[in-house]
Image 1: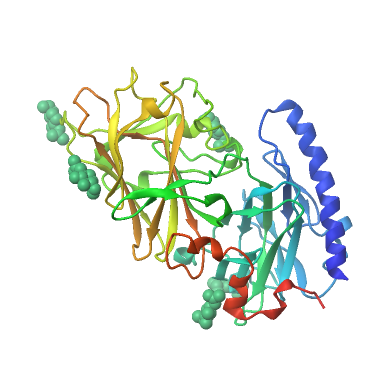
Image 2: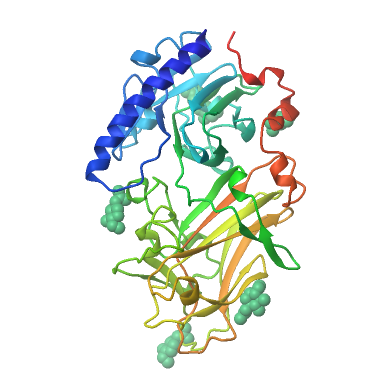
Length: 437
Ligand SMILES: *[C@@H]1O[C@H](CO)[C@@H](O)[C@H](O)[C@H]1NC(C)=O
Ligand SMILES: *[C@@H]1O[C@H](CO)[C@@H](O)[C@H](O)[C@H]1NC(C)=O
Ligand SMILES: *[C@@H]1O[C@H](CO)[C@@H](O)[C@H](O)[C@H]1NC(C)=O
Ligand SMILES: *[C@@H]1O[C@H](CO)[C@@H](O)[C@H](O)[C@H]1NC(C)=O
Ligand SMILES: *[C@@H]1O[C@H](CO)[C@@H](O)[C@H](O)[C@H]1NC(C)=O
């Protein structure tokens, strides 16, 4: 019964969101996702954030859904001043519960989950412990709503995933309380269709011996781990074409003195064959980092970023390039290394960006970090470099992890784990298809 009412709720929500998005699109020329679900969980009213409407999951049309004692809407009685209203309410689940989203457009979908564990008289959300899966792929396990490393430091936590869904299918988001805590929660949910060109199907697969082709990337489930704006400031959802957040790279540089941040105020020349504005916005391409070392004319060193990662996964590393430093074409040559393996020799950005300056381009690499605890990315002078040539430049970098449970290799194995079986393996949860009794 409850499941049935849930469908009704979501359908009504779609209509609301749809009309509002249309009216916005008349005045702003930005990407409009076909599937666009924004849910403010546990709230009695809708919330507008960056011109997007997060629809209440409990007011009006939704009130029947949660009538069972199994879910509760919570309000923070003492919200942090200045914090986003999205984090002032939450939906709490004491039994496995699903949100189901009808998918109209086949393709990659972005799923963002917002968590902020606040205290309330009914639940101390810091005591939660739960698992989250999307269409049977387990994305979070034994999760507390906080990052592992700063549990005592209460901050909103944003988790972002990319998953392929066929049209006419559903995207099913499940919250599964663990036995130890018996409850799960979430503050807000975004499910939007990604632009067609966001995830290309092929990437370069980097091994110790060689770089080869990696196919089938669009069908992999991905989690965003780091999204970095190299040499630039934080880019907030307000300023991003897909409402993403890009953080500065300073904290990841191995040697800060080896490079210099630069910025560009001209027009970024998006062009066919390169990156689109949805792949990364102007703010990301208009800043970069160049190699520089005081009093050294011919740099004999690398600029290196170090990213801590969990071992046991494959990582997709996307590097964004846009030559905002050169005065002329074909002046910039460099080598690129990931975990010490050369992935590009004599990288000539002019050639790859259609013989234009300020034209964005990106390259995707898949690297198996089975045992590695970090990913290091280095750029250094190529043998074609000369002292007059400005050297390596890198605009932004996004690291996404493919997230599978039993991953033994990065090859064909990856795809097999895509759907369903994962969760059953783990918990033997026969009731995974979720029937609310
Ligand atoms: C809620 O839980 C956290 C972490 O266990 C604890 O630090 C905090 O004091 C608790 N709050 C209340 C009101 O008990
Ligand atoms: C959660 O943690 C418990 C206790 O450490 C462990 O037994 C269980 O396998 C974990 N579950 C998952 C899904 O990781
Ligand atoms: C958006 O970007 C502009 C220009 O880079 C900046 O001045 C502004 O503060 C940004 N706004 C937000 C909300 O991040
Ligand atoms: C660079 O050269 C200048 C002038 O010769 C000198 O004053 C400065 O200390 C040098 N810097 C470093 C880091 O060696
Ligand atoms: C840059 O790093 C790579 C990989 O670690 C190494 O092979 C290369 O020699 C380094 N280049 C310089 C100039 O130090």
